[in-house]
Length: 517
Figure 1: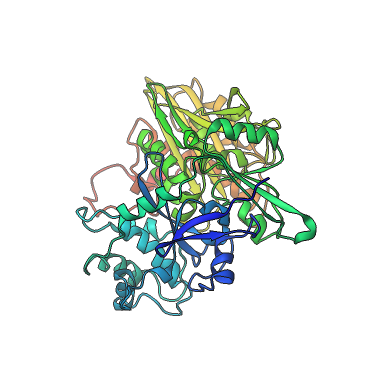
Figure 2: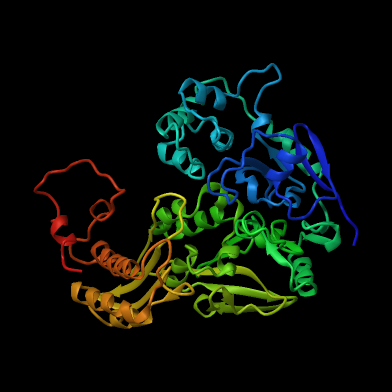
């Protein structure tokens, strides 16, 4: 196999890299090879944000996108044909600070400073992506942009202040036209093949990184290399390298396949390609199902959603993957392909055991299909975790009922964190179907959950806690969607806020929440 050089754009020039392991991370390359130590290593798993950098790439329409990602789990060959920005790039030629940096200084947004470069890069991405005529980003938009950054010194108030103040200074924007031309000049026109030494040393030979541009080429490579690991943002596989010190073997990169990065809609179905980022996928899902808005912002963090894909989350099959309960409740299907053979499988038939799926050798997930919203549908998703932002679920729940004239004509209930796979609650669904949607029906379904699941105890939650939470989430769903006096979000969520109203107006929320569970 011919070794092709990794080429990416940085600091006004094309950088070329060869003879490094395909599993070398962007962070390792920056710190150890380029000696650019502004980008830090904190957690080495994409959680703390100290390693945040910004990647520039052209989308399928040729438009420039700037995305904050975690350098600690991003493999270096994925930079090929893209641009890389780090905190070292922000200082002007005459030494002046960038408005993002100056705002942090002026607002006292840094203390020990270790996490500060990551905050700077997340804020820089927000700054560059905010249209000049759009006004200031809202506090929620700032919170979403900073959801992948942790600070234990300063606190977030001065950092949020800085994220607003950075727009007060004279604008310093990326020359998007020039950057687009630079990326077009290094864009690959055929499959990018890279081989490098095994991360364990020369004695172990070489490892390959395949990056095809078309779905046909991807399918052929997958069939020829069924043992190769498919990667997109390496938000899971990257931890094999940084935490478990495993060599992932040959890699098959899905992130350059244009056909798999598309989103399509017709009257019946929303189709999301397997290489669509989680951020773009959730934006499309929430357009059809606004009830997913909270789960969207609470799924990992923006840098993880920028890098990871919905197809990867589904194919990975983690029992605590937050996408799957909602997709199961909505009766989603997965499109599978092996060479030219395409088949479609209901998502609830895709998982066969703990992190085991129905994928055959050489087969891959090509797309996820989700039915468009049906009439009379009542749908909710809930996530319970120790942290509100960027945390792994203890329990993730999704409920979808089709209620006609007060009677449940169809029910789909699914949970993550309650079994070895994301799993539907068939007994609870049976208790719901054909019944009137009232408190008695809700309690029967809650009781049926004990027959549907026998959750485990682990570091995130005990078995008893998970079961109690699952039952209570079903009750919350009833309170929000019942026919008589459904409770608004502020009546059931500790994180929702509404200005005080007339004490005598509206339903008695306290009494509803105190009903026996």
